[in-house]
Length: 374
Ligand SMILES: [Mn+2]
Image (cartoon, rainbow, N blue to C red):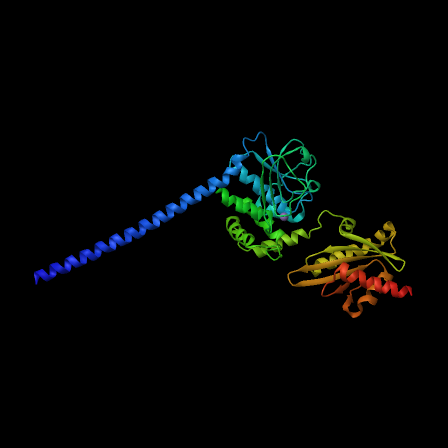
């Protein structure tokens, strides 16, 4: 009886020993796996950072610039790339080549970032170009500057340099996505405020990941950056950016009308159309009133016979156009062209779904003017 018991104890002990060895071995395997991964990762970072090493000792400040008429990708990418270089110990500063637009101002405000310094002339400076590679789109004096790097998602432009340089061009949705990949490759995590600027850049250039140029990299960058930025509802952030982009704050009625303005002539009649985008019907009605008061003045000063303000609401699934005629004759042309489809409220004609100036409005006006001439 005692012998049998001893057997049992031995059996249980052997089982327990096997379990301990098994679990230990498994954990050890996991550890070496993690260790190997860590080594691989460190090697990759070292290899990727070697390109900076290859640039050698850089004397003086490095200026990171995007293109003229700066947009959110150009500004966000300049800020993010300068911050990346700063994190790696370089004296790098983002600059802009012109006034930033209201959308970018909104993003920088949300991020708690200052607008980069305006610097239009760069003779003899250390330069990094982001989001462009054309002299015509860049700073004055770039021909005499020392170009260290070009990070871009456009075709390769006219900018050349005899020096070795980092040239990272990829067909992705935004330059900020390329810069996010470079952060990863260099083993650096963007700060929260930088992540907000990069997120805004990607949202802007890919139209909230909806545009045809959007890639998996842009989607992954958005995911990762929204975590760091702590902006979890990116749709709502994009809506706020879009609303901000439609702000005409500080602009006169004339500035607004002439910001997207074209003149035409048909059947001996000269006319012009200014396009304005707004967010909703309430904004459209307010804008229509402002344009109604101003249009007779534009007709007089431009030598036109008549003029139209074309106010559009185009986002998500909304598509509406309000047409404001300069006078009764212009109003009659709208009525003749669109009939019951154009609903008059005493100031403007509302047409739903909205129409394109080039594809619908101009051909329609041309038809009426040509037929009335005969
Ligand atoms: Mn871009």
